[in-house]
Length: 238
Image (cartoon, rainbow, N blue to C red; front, side):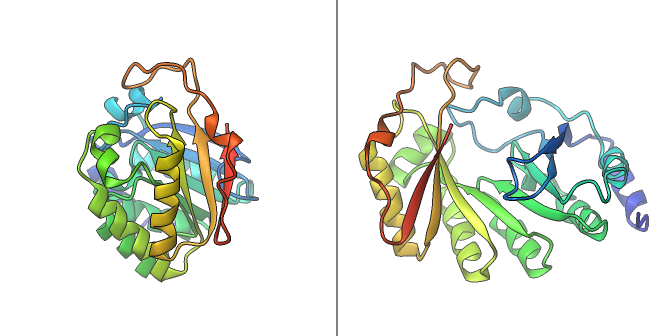
């Protein structure tokens, strides 16, 4: 492991940014074995979020300890997934990702798109290999669903990814009380106008989980619809 930057990381980790680590997954990076780093904290408060303990909680694992864990997984894992919460909120995320890349891992970022400046730097430095971008809603529903006014930064992140040619996917979590078929149609039209083609993943809300806002039962109504277009292929998850 390159330790040149570890002292800097140590100094910055009086506060521990990582809530927990999933040591192995075959589901979160397409066709690769990976681990997931769950970063504490988020700048959105999505009503359907079922990670409130991560969003409102504090981290328990330092960058230093995480690098030690990853060093033990060399040759065993292909990739590291940065998730949360919002993993790009942390000041030393770029420095940390640089260390992870030096260890030979592929890097995937799960992001709400609220940090386009950080994303742009990661793209320019070629530090990420795949991105999952969460598309929460169109502007008229965005603030209600996310309890934030961060649609414009999301839009900037989308255009950065389109211009970069970096492999990425767009995904939307759907609770039937919050997003209807016509909302998804509008979101797909927005993506098409922006120039996005490829896979669009609809993640059904998981009923029976603890969420930030108490919500009713969510029905999988969208699966009855033929949502795919010539340019965008819809896939359902969950």
